[in-house]
Length: 476
Ligand SMILES: [Zn+2]
Image (tube, rainbow, N blue to C red; front, side, top):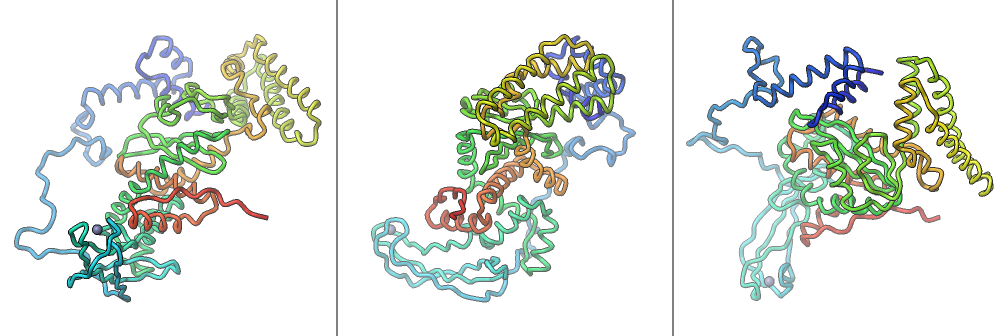
């Protein structure tokens, strides 16, 4: 077995309720696994007793991970300029056009209004649809509403309240970062030097957090929509937040993807994702947490089994009855997948007969008394998932593989490689919201930036998001 797999199975076993049998199982895996288990346990003990960070005074602080270092107690410098110093702020750019707004009806009560003498100016910088940067001066006159008995203003919908950066500049950068995996540094480069559009890392992050909060109803709506689908693929991968290991979960249907970043990798997360029984088919790999999900039917990823078979042969090359087990299981899986492919050309009767034969072969394989330990290990897995291996033959739209789930995870893995995940839990939240919405819009054939800009404008105007756009279906 390769090192990664061994480590994973060791980590799965070290948990509260760790028993002697678990310890023996780890020793069975060999010296490498035992050493890894002992080191892991020692690290956990150190973490629990608060020894981390002061284990050995001879270790230079530079060799310790920042997140393990003890928090310094020193006084924090007050932010901002020192008393008496002149303030410093972002330079106000020169406007290249001026827009004067006017108001006919009160935005709150729709009553008639009368013009006051005063007005104010607001500068909004944005990137236009033709990708040219622009600086617009908005002249906003004040009006008196007799019914509300207060001064009211026309709404400027091009940016969020109090923001100097327009929606398109924020959404375009968000698309580059959260959909394409461009790093913040690269985005700042493009904006500051090539587009002559000055932004800072903090400015962009803050704007994304705000937009993410506004877009949250869409994020929640996508989860709800996805739970009503007939077939769902699910997958998960490691993710780093503030230097700690989190998990990025992904649920994919035919026209939506939903991401969740959570500190846990167990069945508790799945309870968040599936609050009630899921009335469809769930396609996953063999990770145990998925066993807890209640649903109509399940399909386990068969290419995963094939990969496990060839890996076992490659690393262990077992003898005994393994070669026969290997050959029969591999043939069975391939025949099943081929049968599904040929379904169109076969009559219904022939298809049903062959399907029955494949099911019978699976039952025989599971019930036979295998001796070799790897054959027994896989036999146990087949037995546990007996009803979850051939579901794809019963349902037209269920695939025998988890490719859709893995396709959902892959772009996230690229982003993880580039930007090394999130610095805070809030950042992780915003990441999940943007990735979910941008990918879903793209799957549905929309221009994600345009849709987000329109949604934010409508939010500023009315305080409400429009409904999430459906899939564009080709008419022809
Ligand atoms: Zn009014």
